[in-house]
Image 1 (cartoon, rainbow, N blue to C red):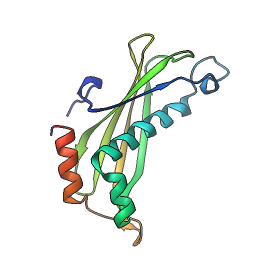
Image 2 (cartoon, helix red, strand yellow; image 1 turned 135 degrees about the vertical axis):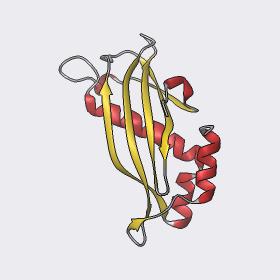
Image 3 (cartoon, rainbow, N blue to C red; image 1 turned 60 degrees about the horizontal axis):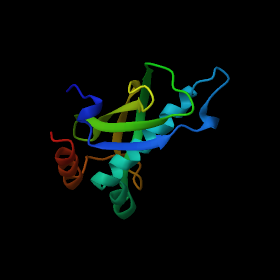
Length: 142
C-alpha cells in the first residue's frame, strides 16, 4: 500500500523550536523521531490503543523505526506531522510518518515504525484485539 501525506487521517502541528537545531543550523536528526512519536501517540489516542494499554496491559511496543531525510528543516517554521497505516498483520502493524514544513510546503522527512502488540504482564507478543483492529481499519479506510 503506497501511503502519502494527504492519505493520512491523523495530522498534528507543532512549531519548530530553536533548541531543536544543531551546530549545522538545521533541525537535528533525532528530533524527527520525537515528531514521529507525537503523531504515533495521536494515532493511538484516536484508535483507542492508549486506553487499551491502561485497562488491559496489552498495548503497543515500538519494534523498529527509520527515517529518510528529504530536505533540511530550520527555525522558525511549523511542521505538520502525519501518520497512517501502511501494513497490518495479526500482531503488528507498520506506520508511515511524514513531516511537512509550512514554510516550504515540502515533505522534509518520511519515516516508518513497526508496532508490535505486546502483553506487558506476561512479557510476550499478543494479537491485535479485534476492537482495535476495527478502529484502525475504519480510521485508515482500509
